[in-house]
Length: 185
Ligand code: IMP
Ligand code: MG
Image 1 (cartoon, rainbow, N blue to C red):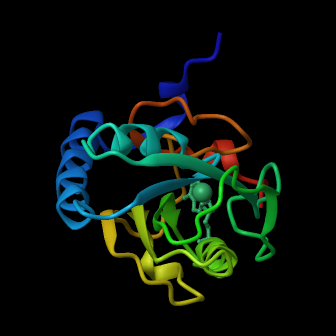
Image 2 (cartoon, rainbow, N blue to C red):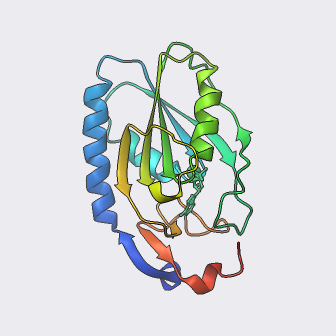
């Protein structure tokens, strides 16, 4: 059996630090959306863990939906730059206050695509909450109102973020050993 921890060269953000920051974000979002008609929209697959923890730290009546996008080849560590919608919304967001939850804001291509898509559905408002932000790689300027952690340019996995479909179930955010992804670009 292959153990996930063995493929990680460094723990970047611990399980404890993620939990603490998620609670802080939940508090801030709960204050901002107290009187709003909140719909949380997670972007699959990467945001599935963050969305479920963040939603449970927001004690407001709200709904949760998911979109699925894809812009990476199976072994890519760089975005292909072309985003595809793999799964759309299950309910209308007309007049709703939408909060998009994302695992990481990297080049900005994915969130820019999602923001343009959702704005066509006439929501009352749209904001972004991303667990991680990698500003050094930005190609498109995307406004993120809520950011968990800003990180430098390293390929990270865990807490929903994957490589080749793996490591999403790692309970912390870590840096993948170079030997694992070498040749995967
Ligand atoms: P962007 O379109 O370049 O902003 O990339 C956004 C998507 O690429 C994210 O939703 C992630 O799923 C994925 N991604 C970007 N950087 C990383 C990383 O360091 N590790 C794992 N996935 C990443
Ligand atoms: Mg993602």
